[in-house]
Length: 361
Image (cartoon, rainbow, N blue to C red; front, top):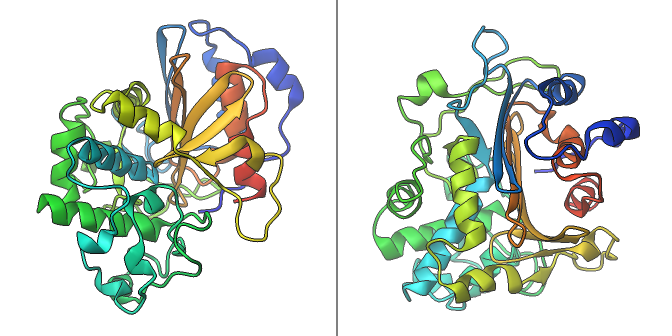
C-alpha cells in the first residue's frame, strides 16, 4: 500500500470551495473535483455541525450505465483492520484477551514457528504496527501465501512498520479465542449492533448487483475481487453509510468502556522508522491502538486509509468536535484528490496525514 497524493492541487479551487459550511454543498463543485481527478465512482458520508451529508458520484462500472448510489458496496481494504481493532478492544473490556500477552499463547501460528522473536508479539504490538513483520510476504490472495514463512526484521515493539501480516496473525488469535470465524464475530459484535446491513468480510449474493467494480488510473474496468476468505487486513466490503455508523461508534466509544476508548487514542507510538529522520509531517502523526492519530489546527483526529489498488478509501474523525468523513472510491486515482475533498468539507488547512502518506510511508 503506497498511495501517491497528487501535488498539483489548484489553490484557487481551495479558496473558492474549501470552506463551504455543512448544509450548503454544491454538487457541481464536488463533481468537478472527481471529474478533474479522473475518479470513476465515489461515495461519501460526512458529518459536521450536527448535520450529515451523503454524496454519490460516477459509475459503479464504467462499461455499464449504472451509477453509484448509497447502496453501492465498495471494497474497504485496510479499513477492515480498524473493525478488528474495535473487536479486540471490546474483548479487552471483557477480559477475553490481554493487550500484552503474546498472541502465541492464544494461537500457535504455523508460519512463525521458526522465529522465536515473532512468538513474543502481542496484540498491542499488532495494533501499533510494531510487529517487525513486512506488510506482506507474498500477495495474500495467492495460495502460496498460506504456507510462506513469516519472519520479523527487527525486535517486536522497538519500531513502527505498517503490516497487514500482523493483523492476519491477530485475526487468527481472535478466531481461536472465540472459536469462530471473524465474519461471524464481526456480524455479532459490529455489523448487526451498528445496523451495518450491507457489510461483510465475505462476498454475498446481494453484492452481485450492488458491488462496485474497480478501475485503473485510465478509467478501465478491472476484475472484480469477490473474496471467499475472511481477511481483516483487506477483504471488508461495505458502504459509506454503514462505515459511518461504525466510525461514529468508534469515535464516541459506543460498545467500549470509557477507559478503553481513551486508551485507543492516548496509547500512541511514533511512526518514525529505524534510522530514518522524522519528517515535519511525521511529527504531527502517531499511531494509536488500530488507528492513526493526527494533530493539526482543528484538533486531534483519528484516521485510516485503504488501498486495494483499484479501490481507495479514507476516513477521518475529530471526536471532540463530532466531525467526520468516510470516503470510498472504485478508482486507482481515488486518493489523489483527498486533500481537495478534506479542504472542501472542513476548510483549508494542513493535512499532515496525507503529507505523511505521500512523502514518508
